[in-house]
Length: 185
Length: 185
DNA sequence: ATCCTCATGTAACACGTTACATGATTAC
DNA sequence: GTAATCATGTAACGTGTTACATGAGGAT
Image (cartoon, rainbow over all chains, first blue to last red; front, side, top):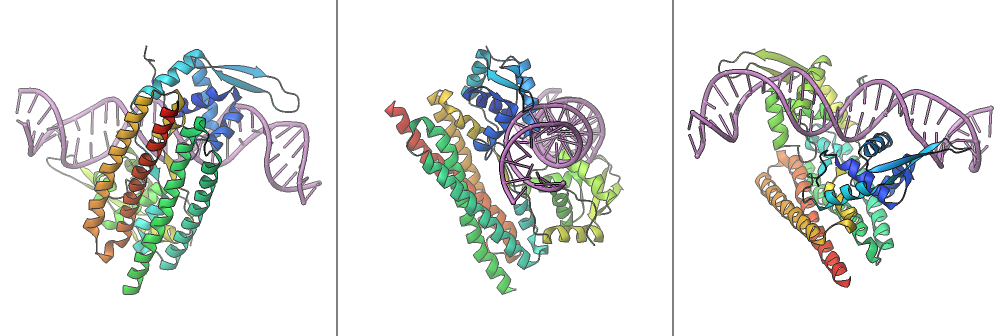
């Protein structure tokens, strides 16, 4: 039953997207951006490396397509084995822990060496970006609203919304405190 | 003035930690875990690669130390040039955007292929981990409470706290909805 | 004319993780 | 006594990012 070769999350993500229809690498890249990028980025080069790997495993089947004006391309579709592998992965209860990195937080950690005005500007900018993202996710969530088929997709978008809201609230919370610290000195 | 060679955030993080006192690579690794790991992980091997690089740049100075029972080691300290480079980086207003990855969210995105019970278990587990993390951060934040020197460190810990709180609230929010979806079918 | 975007990918390099090594001490 | 932890690192490999390539079509 179990597939011998263990493949990383990125491979399953590509495989999963190919379940939505056959696509070229280029299409996958665009689709990633529109769907999972906010919790799982995959860039172009990586996609193009994953596709042959999935093909070697027999999880997808690629076909070369000639085009006139545009460069020739290769389109891929899930195989039955690919679908099985995907479902098996989905149903295994394990998942790697979340990864989060923030250069802003690194700078904040060392901010005692920082010019207070610069810190203030950076936090302002950070907040503004978060507001923009929050608004985007709000629109997305509202757009998917009541469609029961998209409940899971909506749930992931909702995470985006909530986490940006939390970020905004956090900036406001610490701005007050850091402001005070500056006065005290 | 400006340093010609641009180095990544990880290098500055190591450099910054070496500002807290001279350390071996091993010490840096432990310190990372106790301080910045929740928004900027750096593993052992990476630390050991950064140290010679920082030394080549003249930002730190390493000294070999003989030990009797323990393996010999090399301890590093910030140089004046290193400190300048760090401050310059801190005061530049740029920062790379946050990166976030979550295999759980990838699985959730494709969860229409998933056994509902498994999804339920995964979300339960995810929530439990978030609760644990939240509690840890709560203790940390409370521990650093009123010390003005640690305001910035406290701010980063507070981000950990708030984001885990948001995660917990999000799980509760979507659990209700997904439950309903299941009934409707 | 020139620059930007679409549409395909490849190549090189840097970052990040896992596995390997080694010996002393501490815990059970 | 055996296993885990401390205390140092190194080597190998896999992931992820940036730069390079190429030509058509549309915008200014």
